[in-house]
Amino acid sequence: MLTNESIFLINSLTEQNGKSVKELARHYQISQKKLWYEIDQINIELAFLQLPKIQLETGRLAISNQLKEGWKAERERLKRRDIQFQEERIYLIILYTFIAQEAISNSHYQDLLQVSKNSVLLDLKKVKRLCSSYHLEFSYSRKMGYHFIGSEQNIRKLAEYAISKL
Image (cartoon, helix red, strand yellow):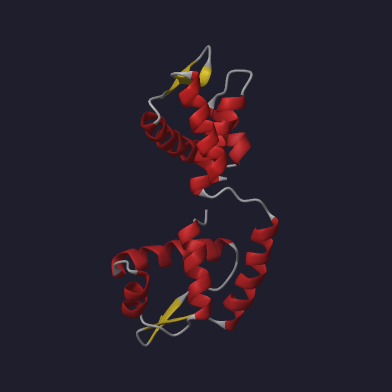
């Protein structure tokens, strides 16, 4: 899945074709290792989208015209489709749990977000961390499903925060 960082990086690379990895890492204020990791992840997604990969030619990143055109079309498709990026999924989980009238399981979150079980589990860990900053506990039981434990006022504050982030 493409992250916000990946999409920003692809957009930037298609505009700044021909720069070296060192220049780009300095420009984005990340390490060269992190930049290579991001490019590898992007290339995996590009292959899935049946687009050409980002290449390294004579020490510089090369973006083919076919990739530029293909990415432009894909970017338009992404705009039309409401994709829940990693950060947004956390807030959707919070709100979904907040309005739930029945027990919620992992599979409910998977259906809602259209992501794998492991992705949901990682997001749930992030939700638990965020809940602790609101003096809440995010808990699961077979009988009650996922739910918040804490004062109603803190639960509402968390829901308001989640709404503001979406």
